[in-house]
Image (cartoon, rainbow, N blue to C red; front, side, top):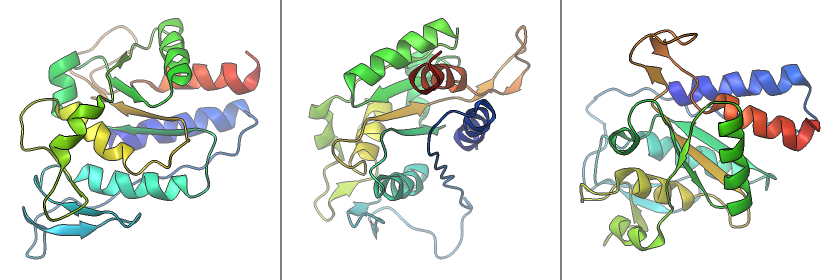
Length: 211
């Protein structure tokens, strides 16, 4: 919910500012409830892209929907692809609750996003898409597993999972965000918080609006 709200807020800012971009917004919203036909550990699901995914962890269900949204977004070969999600507790363990984790496959884009984050006082911290950790998602019965069996590097392996569904050559940034203030701060009351939104809009405004 936090990621979807951030994306909708960012879209509203882009449209209100009249940035000269062709914007497409995908909200991967699904019901999350237990039922007799719910998937189980060891099940294999086929993604929209065609890759098969072994279910290692049934609690890592959000990425199963987000990966399909990324694959659909990639069909049009966009100039930029962004996603926001309250994806892993591991990101909060690494960075705390007030700083979203940023993953990016493009060095120039990452540098510009971090500069915008500092400029807008909307902090983000980049974590690596560390390629050797990809083997933690290997599966004997599918193309990839939806989570690692290890307790280590949970935010990174989640980002590596998503990267599998981003077409080659498309600059992509993934924000793993708490999207929630645990306590009231000046101008930021306790509750939902659009972490990373101001940073990304500031970057987009500078890139496309000439600001």
